Image 1 (cartoon, helix red, strand yellow):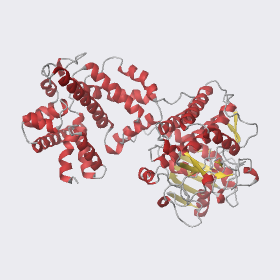
Image 2: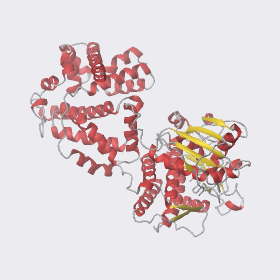
Image 3: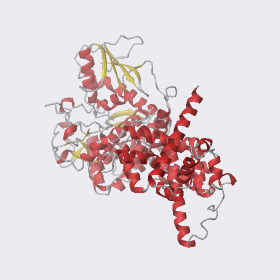
Image 4: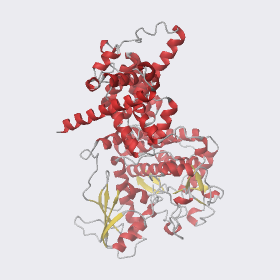
Length: 208
Length: 428
């Protein structure tokens, strides 16, 4: 082997200094692609609370929420390239996965309940297994936990709560609220846009 | 046809997972094509992620349960000594790419090797006439490396897939080069389904064959480590003959079995390294230190991963910075031998390479392999190029005439140097 002078070797290790959030997300995703189990542990450390919380709010069942949490992280481990950093943050993507799985669970349970109990127990606590605790035992309490949501006018926060925390489609939201579907859609849009704006303000505030 | 306004109204509902399935699909299809809506969708998604409110903690043991369950879902990279983590990582990534690969994709053309028939030169005549010999340098006749002096392994050239991907400069040796890792790879993969036009059937290496090629060369490493290898390595066997033997062997069994055999051998290599003294010499065409051999195998595994990703339209990511760096350093050590016979004298000159991007670095490469680079050197030319792109060039997966490089100093020397770089491919 000929000798080649190893001069200055820059950027040898991780680009820890130059990182915006998207690079961080991409780096974590790539470590998963290369089969790095410590990346999975890092992912869990960063996001398990977010994922579990969303699952718990929606299912209102601690054991079910933990099942959802496990499934979300296992799915990322199995298919890390399903996450595309250009399309949004890892946080937003994991929240979506958690929410979709939790909603699927609730919808299945509900269908099952309707079939087997003819709706008689429908009004009873949905909670099964380990309850998550008083804080999420009903939708009102869950709603109180989100200050930004509380700031919204009742008609908007009610629509969003029905959709996101109770897992209804916008059509079901319209039925529950007794409004046209178009109105339900625009309430969800207005409400969520206001929340996004509040989030922006809060983040800008943190930066200052 | 659903209108843009109708879709826009659905984005918030979509972000809340409150659309019926058929509308969810419509919205997601729209987001792929409309930047304005994609931007709004991203903002609203981020807002929705906060709707859970104050964070709760998952029950104790959540992480342990996850780490216990994960390997059954997907095998992690096999633990290996530091110098082999790049290899273990490329193996894990290729295994991910090959997981659940549809049967038809296994038979896609992934690379072009040369047949023994075409390359009847004495160095190549050991191969079976009727089978591809991906260990040989393929169609790059103008840059055919002397196999005694180049790096081992010899990845064959990437396969052409769609006519519009060809650089069509007449007579250019690069006209069959695809662009692995290119942005439009997904679309190109879709268009390239079953495209086998314009190639001699004997030249084509399917995804299955390419994996067999990797097994063949990894097998030389396994053999050097004293591991059992099937089919057995014959003493003095050339790389081309070895590949042909293994391709023939693997064609007798289903691709999934080939995948398992490939992974099992790679894992066995990683495990064996924990007990090996570092001074083992591995013959991959020529003798290599164990450390260089592992880097070479990581390098070739990556290059072929991109070949397979390109032809199957599946995504792949370039190596992590800490994994690509040793590959670039390895290329720098091999290059003097390669450029020596391709660049006109005087050879007492140096070319400095600034490889940019994470994992890059700066190297000064002599044109004469016998030279020891002095501590203070004034290079005749400097070339600045992205480290990943440079490694693809050295893997003969980029056209030196078209690579984005900034040149200072002797421009002719720099261009001759770049033109010579792909001759180290077949890279390891």
